[in-house]
Amino acid sequence: MSALPMSGLPMSGLPVTGLPLTGLPLTGWPLTTPTEAELEFDRQVDALTLAGLPAHLDLPDTCFRAFLEPLRDLLPPPVDGTAGIPFVVVVPDVAVSDVLAGVHTVGGAGFTTMDDDDVGRFRPLPGLEVPTAPYLLLDVDTGADTLGQAPAEVLPQLLGGGRSPLTIAEGLAVLVSDPGVLKARNAFSLLGSRAGDKRVPALWTSGQRPRLGWSYQGAPHAWLGSASCAGRLGEPTQAT
Image (cartoon, rainbow, N blue to C red; front, side, top):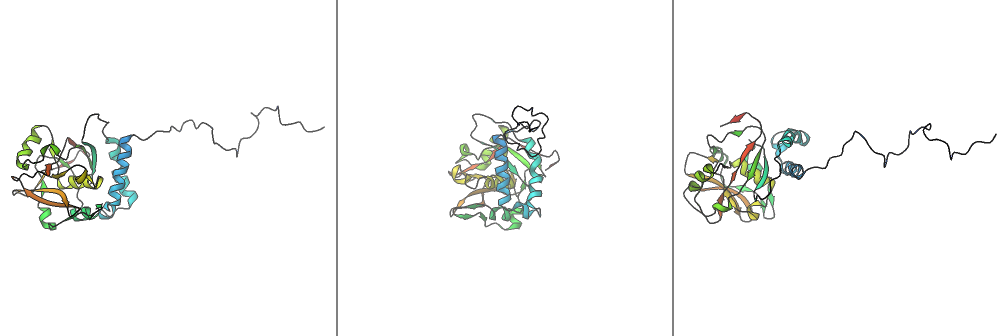
């Protein structure tokens, strides 16, 4: 008896081992498209990694990324009609000089003429409740509407409007996330960090390079605003 032709035979009894899965539905494996916020979060984590923060914290890159991953669940929903920066990832307690050196622009790396001891005198204002673990700054504004105003005049305006001034670490986080921010937006004071004197730290461009320096709290500058945020979101344990 000759063999029957394959055509016309039911396929249900034939084994499928080895058949390609291309084109077959993968039920149970939902595919999700990253949100705009998630893509921005990944970009900022990449920027922090390229700036050398994992090495400064003695962490492998993969561990550093895992260290920040819980913040993904805290990303704010999109808000229409705002000119601010929706969020910025902040990693506290990294040496200022190390962070600045990791910020690269067309003009060169960031720098400061302040020594480490002097920078260390600047501490967050009491009451800011700055998290001690990585956190998100929300709705960051570099203060374009405060250009030409003395920092001492701006602080009560910010607090009265429910805003919070940025610290040095937070200003550097903004700079790392966008090294061109000082040109694309404006130079800005960091009223959230003070050293017990009349100085206010600030970030501006000097010789085409980002620079951390300071100005007097009563001195207005047409090119210098005062940065603020709507809040901080991270670990519940706070430090004053």
